[in-house]
Image (cartoon, rainbow, N blue to C red; front, side):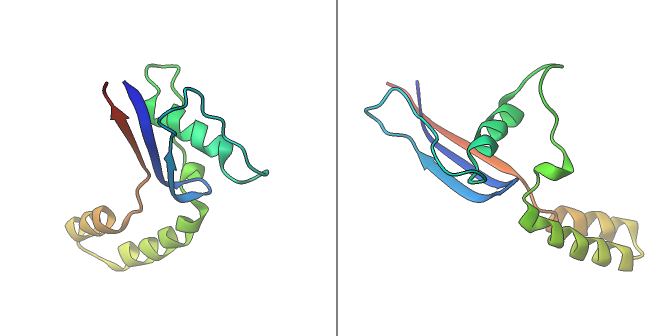
Length: 107
């Protein structure tokens, strides 16, 4: 089994990232300047794959900073709605989601 691709959405500085891992290589190294997302990639893997009591917890600050303004807009819309059921529907429909997709190949 081999990890072929990592896709991350709305996690910290990573709004939409896809990393294609070289097929003929056995080692992958993340290289880049400070604040380019290297640590965020590793933390996303730890958060979404971690198990048990030792696993780190996802926090508000893990959501992409670009989505924070969306939360303010959603907050205003929910506050303006009187019906609790409609509030829940608004939250389900509008709330930004973090996502991690891993593609594996089996040989």
